[in-house]
Length: 244
Image 1 (cartoon, rainbow, N blue to C red):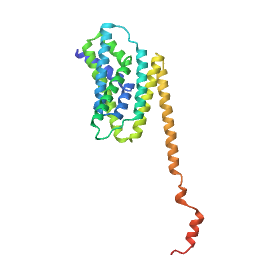
Image 2: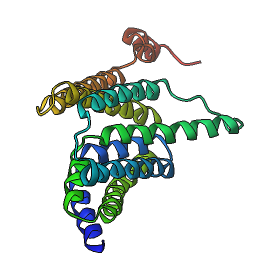
Image 3: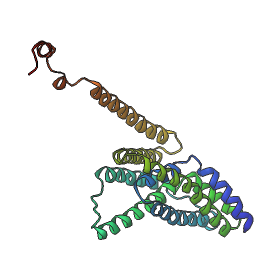
Image 4: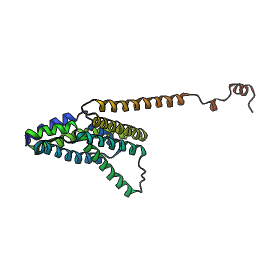
């Protein structure tokens, strides 16, 4: 079992580095408390990898990953719209704060559960479970994925403290849309780079649009204010006239 734990931990941890799951974790950490995101990821990962070892060790059949990917993509588009809408919250609304926390936990757990079904880490876990102790593979793969995503959560939490709220809100929504298109196209066109291309296109358009908006805003700020300058002839007359 110890060998299976170490093997699966190393494989899944390395597989998660740079994966979309890490980017998802960082995105959620920009909007919600780190412990809510980490808890949701842990629950989702535990369930997904339990399904993975069961498939690899007992069932040996493929899940309808295309349909699951489409459902996950729709869910992420909904999360993006939800992020743009925002949450109205004051210090006195403790009950509402509790509901928002629970909703965030459910959103994170369900998003990761849907995104990881059929992902390469799940397929790797299934493969490892066919020839190794399934309990060790389950434990090691779960801990490996949570550890890798925890790094992304740290990055997201640190960025969230140094970025303005408006930037975080729009940036998180854009990333959710990117993941949504990515998963949708992966489900519709499996075994093709359509998902990566589509998600990259959405991200590229968003970056270009944000850059154009920043340039326009900077140009408006650099334009002289005619109301403060006044008429130069009037200013010259005031200089010639004696002061009272």
